[in-house]
Length: 335
Image (cartoon, rainbow, N blue to C red; front, side, top):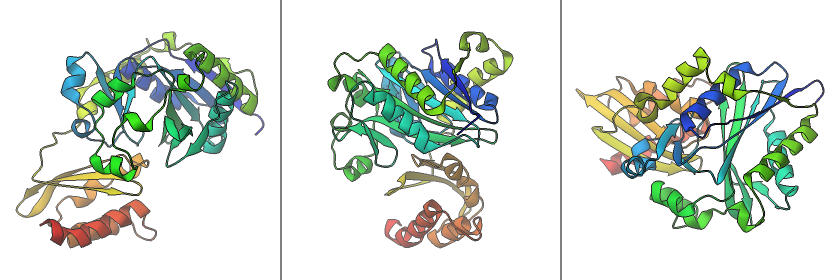
């Protein structure tokens, strides 16, 4: 692709709320034909997907007691643990330059410069020796898009397993019985690997793929601006991190091929007065738009399913159709 403007950015912060605020702000600054590689690290943090239930995915009390931070990102997907043995990458691009295949190609090429035979597989992961070291997630904004992920270099796996509590159904679906058994640190493949070496390799691969010099941005200066301060307040707020209380009159959950779903209903007079849909599904916007479909609907599987389908005239997304079918067929078994 010609005439692509390339940018490089590295966060000097280890604060997840600052780094996620920077990520959102940078998304609004990507030029029409721009693409940026943003590298960042968080210290002792659990980051959950946009539509996840914090209490279900993370041992929040334990994390807080041990001086960890909990953060919620804009993208979908599941919960991840970050420490300084992990490097996060984000590709931020305009709709014209966003290309998931090229972006993954950069990550794979950078790792191969370090003699790590990585490959992409599954729903959104990168593997080596059939074990995962990188999960990827996505956000599609009006002005720009991003694709980001983790790279486990020398993460404390014991702590990761200590704070994360994925649903049992998710572990069973993957044929494993613990968080620890399904991940690998890249230092197990290349014992001399360091975070600075990995950053350099990724930046080299990025410029080789896209060309240009890669203009470097000063995120230290940017962090003091008023828009950034407002974004930081958002990401550190309890209302953003936790959302509404998880106490509902009725709670249902199921694991589909595309992700785990938990639906909570508050009921008044037999009708849904409020609902929440939690999920690690990759399409964050779609999941976020499901709960309003149930407002005022009688609490039974048929009516709830019809309400879902009614809002998607014509082509119904697979996730919506699966959820509606499940509500219809399973309701009688559950109640």
